[in-house]
Length: 309
Image (cartoon, rainbow, N blue to C red; front, side, top):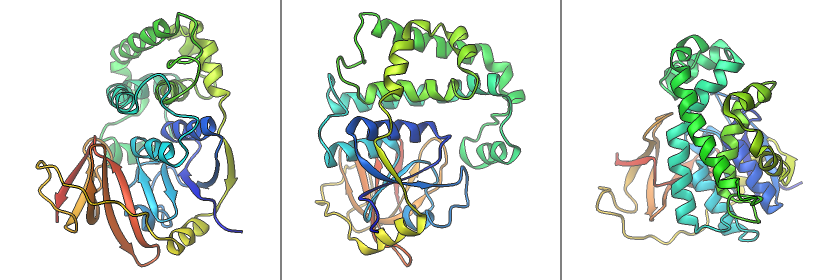
């Protein structure tokens, strides 16, 4: 059996993976599901993603999309209808959701661990040393609980006000990226047996209908796929052509130059390759891997830096 056209490398606990899974549900797509470990090593993903360690990663043949702000626009290009951007232009929706997630992420984790208690020690050590660079154990985060809860509560109050006119989704009648960006943060906090306590803390009763509607979008039609099959699919494919465009003056590199691309906040692991293009919202590099062959890796421009090697 051939590998699916779309392959998502993810794990169940990842809220950002849930954001993409729901986007696949909106579009009703078939996709291959490769389960990966919550933390490295990931020996069969590394040849595809060049050591990039955030999850999820979307694979389309030999094109590898890193970060949800590269993945969701890619899904929109590949399957334009139904759109992920109803009621709001895609650039504005991406900009707003980028700011929302960036601002709230650590506060959301603080509320989550207040109710969830500590995660496994190895996971906490990994997040502190190599990913978030912050100790997210319950003991370390609890002194800031009131501040984190206040920050989250202000956001959920805005969310409730936005939905108070009875609209089914934030963009109107149809779900989209704005719903997913808000929902996956709530999904993390409310997971397990935490929903009642989190709902009481944040007064989420008025938006239970919206929460249920977003959850009901489902995940499309996943098909369990092996990491070996995904690697073989990349090796058998060629990256889609990307027109080389003028590189912004802020980036001291030209197409063909050896560069690294690195997240500028968390999990700052540089990925090496040769620059293909830098567009308004996207960075593309080429990697030639002995296991996976020729690859194009796609990153969002926001939140990533490019440096010559």
